[in-house]
Amino acid sequence: MYDKEDKVTEPGTEHVWFYGMDSDGYSLDDKRNKSNGYGDLQDIVTKFKKRDARKDTDRTQKWFMVPRQEIVDEKYELSLTRYKEEVFEEIEYEKPEVILRKLIESEVGKDFDENALSLIQGGIVKELLELKGMLG
Image (cartoon, rainbow, N blue to C red):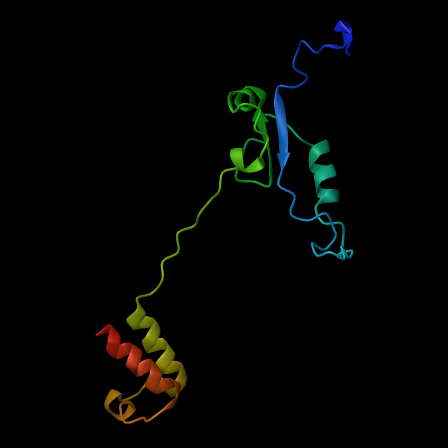
């Protein structure tokens, strides 16, 4: 049972602090061997002591603050992934033809004769030429 005086009627905080801990300083296998250092534990303590609801708003960082009302709106979901914003960097790759040419150049040098290369009977250069032929 609880006493009416023990009932909380006002929220204790207006912001909740989240930290995405990657390591506690021990291995994740069944042996739980100590890793080098302390993992994220020291950083968590340091960042927690310096937390600031006005500044710690960047949800792409390892730690950030979330307004209490947002958590209430999310039905008190306290999963970090619910609030963290993932940043995806788009990577542009060279065209396959360019990559194959560079691979062939790395094997035979920059000044190569494609007709002479076509006479090669085996090896990686033959395989690269076959790939090049498939690309057109």
